[in-house]
Amino acid sequence: MKSLNQHVPTIVFVIGFCLLAFAMRTFFHPSVDPTLIPLPKQELPLPASEGDRLKNTSSLLLRAGHLAKPANRLESAQAVAKEKRRAADEFFAHTGLRMRIPDGYSFYQDSDGPVQVLVGSSEPGKRDFYFFATKGKYPAARGGQYLKDYFADEFVIKVNGKPQNFLNRSAYNEMIQFKAMTERGVEVQAFFFFDAKLNETCMLVLMNKNLSRQPARIKEIVDSLGRKA
Image (cartoon, rainbow, N blue to C red; front, side, top):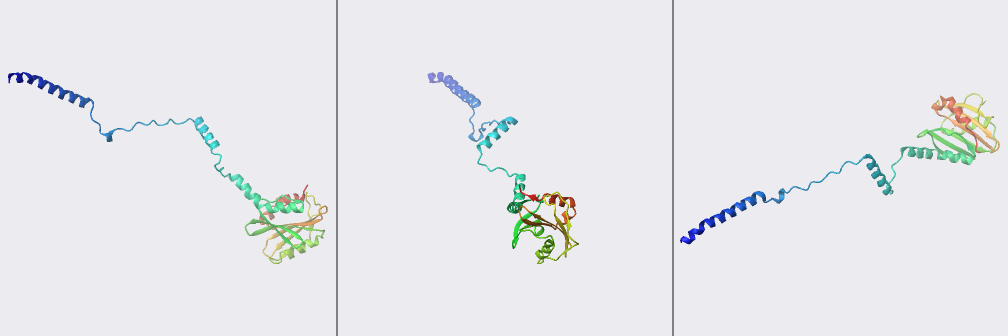
């Protein structure tokens, strides 16, 4: 019994030391809840400089050659304008003539027996430009009568006064001008001429109210008439 009591202090010391060691380990190395482990810090990329951005963009464009090219409004407008005047270009190419075609018109080709007809509209459904061409030489008097006959199914045309020589800078010095009026009060101006080399009698007819108020523009159109080189 005496020998057992002698070891009590040693046992108490060992137990106390173990508890102290456990407490210190818990304090310096606490157990961690996995749900509370912070996510690794991600470094945000620094903003690229303007030069690097352009370089990367250029590389992307070179690699993405299959991507569709953005639509160009100017090219689209030019394509539409070209299509609208395509019939006029074909008409003058076939007749061997040339003329400064007014802007903003849509054209189509027609025929009246042996007469080839180019019809232009400044607005949808508004036919106010005509160009007639036929083989052979016809007197100017036929021009006024032809106007009445051609449009007889649509409206009545009354020719005002006698046809007059029209001074111009085109290739046709002997050009005759007719002035007329439709029953609807629309002014009609017709320019009749003959191309000896092509053996073609032609007549340009304008019924556009805006053009009628711009004699300088009409003269510019008439002056542009000629034969293809």
